[in-house]
Length: 404
Image (cartoon, rainbow, N blue to C red; front, side, top):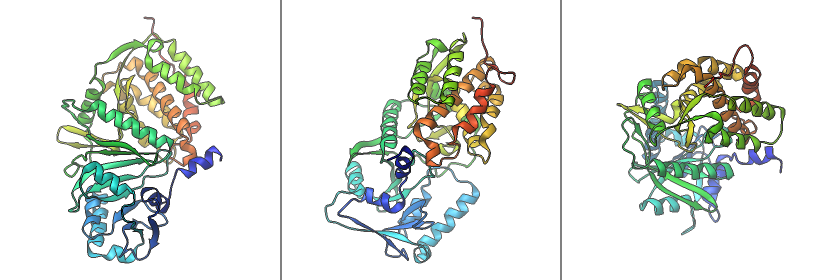
C-alpha cells in the first residue's frame, strides 16, 4: 500500500470507526430515521462529525459539555440542536447507527466502565481531516454528568500521541499552578492494540468565548518556567540536536536540504536563548479562560527544552496557516515576531531566529505526519515554508548574529 493510501485509510468514516469501538460480534447498521438508533449522526450518517446518544436526555447533555468555550452563534446552534434532540424532532429527520448488542462482548463501553468503575454513555466527536485525527469521546454517567474525556489512538501516529499525552499529564500532575489548569490523567492503557486515554473534564461551562491575552501569556510563562529554564547557545542546545535528528528522518528533497542549511546557519549564531517547557499546540481551540486561570487541554505535543516563545508563536500562527491563503503566513509571522515574543520576555534581537526555528519545527512535524496527504489545512508545507527559506539570510529577513 502506498503512503498516501495508507494515510487515507487512517481516516475512518463513522461506520468503520464504530466497528473499531464495537468489534465483532457486534453489528453496526445505518438507520433512518434515528429514533431507535444507538447514536444520532450529525449532520448525517454519510458525513458525520458528531455521534450523539439518541436518548432525548443524554444527547443534549453531550452537546452541553462542549470542550471549548462557544461564541453566540455556536451557542444558538447548540441550543437549537439540543432542543430538537429533546423533543425527538432530530431523531425523526436524521439518520443514525444501531449497535446490535452481543452479551459480554468486548467494547469501548466496557473498557471505560472498568476504568471509571461505573456505567457510562458516550458521545463521539470526529475532528476535521488531518493526519492526527482521532475519535474524542465524551464519557457521561446515566444522568448526563460528564465523567471524563477519552481519546482513542487507532493508528501508529495517534497511538504515539496518546502515549505522549499520558506522559505529559503524568509529568504535569501535582503542580501548584497559579495561572494554569491541566486535566488529570484518569486512565491510560492499551486495548486491542490501540491506546485509550481518559482525562478529567475541565469546567468550561462558565468560560467566555473571548481569550484574555494577559491570562494566556501568564499561563504560558508559568508552564515554560515550571521546571526552571536553561540558557544556552543554539549549537549547545538539546533542542537543536533533536531538530537536526528530525530533519534527518525526513529523507532527501530540495525542501529538506534547504531546511538543513538554515539550521546550520542558526547553529553558528552566538545568541544565548532561553529554553523551557512547551505545550506544543496551544491554540484558541485548545483552551478557555475562567477567571484568572487558563484551562488548557490536548497535551499530546508537550515537550521540555524548547525555545521560550514557541507557544506564543503557535497561538498566532495557526489561524494564519488555516486561512484560505496561507502562502505568506510564515513571512508574516516573522515580521510580527519581535512584538509577539516581547510579551513573553524574549529579546527582540533574538525573535527572528526563534521564529524561523519555530516555522521549521512545524514544517518538520507536518511533513513527518504527512498532513498534506490527509487533507489538513496548511498541510502543504512547501507553500508557506519555501518563501521563508528563500528569505532567510536575504535582504528581507536576516538571521541575527551576535559577537558574544
